[in-house]
Image (cartoon, rainbow, N blue to C red; front, side, top):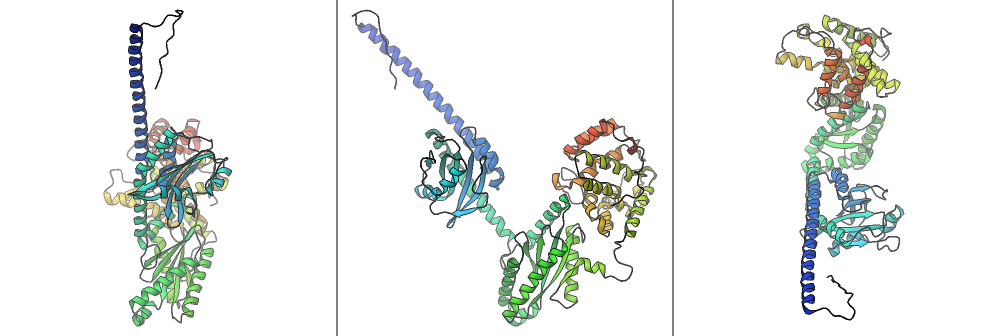
Length: 591
């Protein structure tokens, strides 16, 4: 409602009837115009709010992992309301679990944490099916969690119920460091948003639970073989990226077949369930246990050397023996142990090494742990790994032999070494890391010793079988280096220097930063050396042409950041000795 007030300066004279009629008409027109403008603004505001809700709903539905996209969701929401702290909290039994959380002011909880549901604002809004706004926590706090928020700077907070098909599943909570930060219109907007995102959140949780069930062995409650194979590949990629070590245990029950035959399969299944519980309680929090099949189990021990893994294995073995003895059950277990990368750098190699160690454990009497490395240390005379230096001499002799196999690639490894070392130093790697890159660069093509000369020197297009032979050289090289303990840190670079940034490389199809840094460095140094060297089928590229090729390959074949650093080195006058194949000062670098 509004009032149009009109005054006159005519002393004692009243408005005439026709003047009043005119003013009433004018007031009517003004009122209609104002109402039209107000309605227009309201419609525009509704359109903006609907567009925002649609954008936010699109973000929430873009991934089944709500935690991954919640930060972007909160950033978008900041366009219309204060968001200094926000979370999605779901009810699970008598607890509240934080599914997603973002904060610029710290938080008493993190994603995955659980708190008692009783006495929380979420309990209230889910029961009442309406939002709750606490405008100033420093003046009044209704719930026990308010004190935690207040200590971290929150002053006002809105709790919105998440309701699906009439059932409350949790809450969407938004908070600000300002008191009285939210007006009624903003609270209505947040309420509408909560209604829109509740179902996608519930669907994401149903999907997550289905995924979890697909990874779990129903009998033992441990992860299943399918999930083990996925996790093993992930662990190899993660540990190779940082040059770390991890270990595998493979367990097999001794005398289980006899037990099954005597007591029947139901009793056997019950025993396997008990064994799964013993394994789970005997390993560390960071370790993961899997049922591999039948009466075989596998444990992944991240960032664990073989000596520490052996201690875990013995604890598991002794606990199984002790508990079975207490139940008067003649069951023990044998365990095989292998470690990455010393016992293998590919998933198949590691499983084979672990399985072989398990076979030795059972063959030598059972109820014991056997290390894969121990098998290598006890072969027939003359078959062992040389750790005294002569093995290294043989390896570096092979490097020279590889370079000498082809006139056109002679000195290639030393050129790659010069470029790789300069790039490693330019990005700030430590002296030890630069030394590792240097050694890996010299050894990166050592696997070509196993490729026929006629394929390496072929001038025409390679046949499919010939190309597959060429692609095998990283694995061949890794197998050679794997027998020299002092060189195992070079394995990731040697094995993965032909991976591509877009995931289309070989041998594993690693993508982006899952490719070890050393391998990404070698890929650029190797490619630049190849392009600026003469080949049977073309002349050497000039630097400008090679740089153009590198730029075209950035974000496809090569790490884009490393490409720019490398190009900067070349344009600044890269060491000329690399272009003519001048060897490093030491004939045989120290690994």
